[in-house]
Image 1: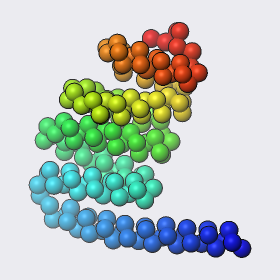
Image 2: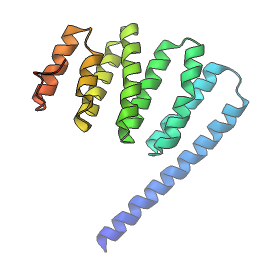
Image 3: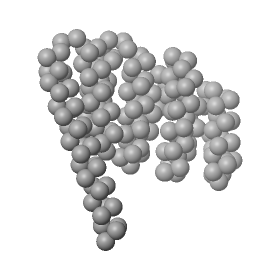
Length: 171
């Protein structure tokens, strides 16, 4: 009986959380419909995507985040494009779609390298490790993204070796 009550309380909290988020999403969508400025549209899409992500609605989080790729590309917003790719990587990791996660992570990693954003590079390397741990096919993918940077490659190999991956025959 006690477990049932706790479960009900958790479900009620989750439902209340979702209702609050849906109100916020609906109000942001109304603002989005009236917005003309592409940078503001980008920001609103990203806010909506993050709310959906926090609410475990990965499909809608992906949908709104992907709308930002052409906007960021057209406006030449390289840092925002890198962040969008990093966000999509995280969504796809949680959505257990590792192929898509790897695709967006490679794009984000390259952008962060061009921007010399060390924090962004570190995050994408961490995401490669998560993907590699989830799916062994991505070990070489992980290493190939750092192949032009010998220190990153050695660090990646050391990490993979510490995780029990045989790195002798890798790139």
